[in-house]
Image 1 (cartoon, rainbow, N blue to C red):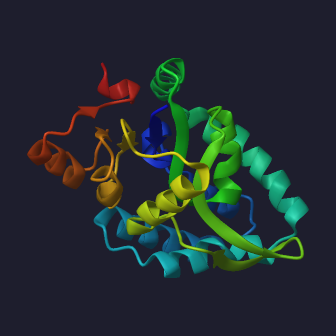
Image 2: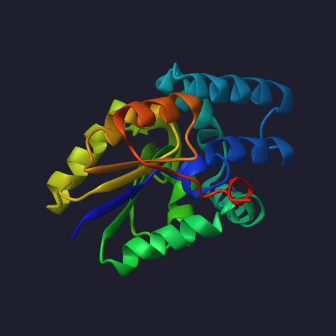
Length: 222
């Protein structure tokens, strides 16, 4: 059984769930709008440019989890999934997932976005296995810290290796689909790397390495 591994943001989704969650919190008045927007934009651009300080970003991104009641967070998350995520679920991504499922592949989403946000999104895609950055919890409340290794850049490789050791899977015949040059360390590890609507750096690297590219965006197919 081969692994089919998918990045989430801007790969299976036509947007970035971490960024959209931040915008949702601003619009709900959960966080200070001007300051949060400024930092959210800065970190998002740093990510796109390939020089994101992941720990600084996570201290920022996990603060609303720390500062709010878990019951409120769960209610906001349900609204967020319905209002902001469902509209950016890509039909072609669902078809790609179903092709792999039909081939009997083991499906896995791996994402830097935290597990609180992404667990219900993985469930929406019908994918049971999720590797995501884990927000630390103590006595049922989020602390604002990270538990373990953030699944970002080389951290995705480290987290995947942990998961492989725990589950007995391996990378023989594996696919990995991603849009971002930040995922080059993991793309280089699988048997079948695929650039999906790639950013310019990844598109250039895919051409050099002879990796296939595809688009899951309806506007790119017209």
